[in-house]
Length: 194
Image (tube, rainbow, N blue to C red):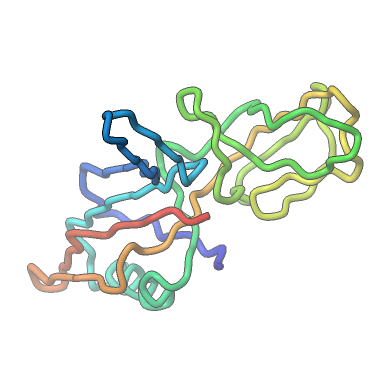
């Protein structure tokens, strides 16, 4: 597991595709009735990226992206991805204190669906409150940890930036040179990991 962030580079084409995936077992009886079993409580996200140009010059975009892929050994090592349009929450409800629990998993609300985030963005300002009062905290992965467990019944909220924890979907990447010192990557798929 790595906390290195996927590089933000020019040349990223429109459109970017974001696909939520669940895993469900569906069994159909002889009378047509179905039984369904959800295997995952949160979706696996797929991000399909396409780079129309990567310069092989002083900017080093080609080497940055190819080197990043090589350092991860394809799909072997996970890393962090900053979705440019889905990376921040404000006053997100994280739960209620019980007087015993000091660590709370950070969440994000996506159209009424709550899911745990991959990792907090330590480079952005963040704040957490218990019962509406800002309190000191520390961070551990995707959790906020308070020195003292919030008292029973007090709401715990937070405002923070976040990353998706992802890996490459494949062990190969096809970089294509289409002009002198200009390359493209037609398919770069990232898959979220838990």
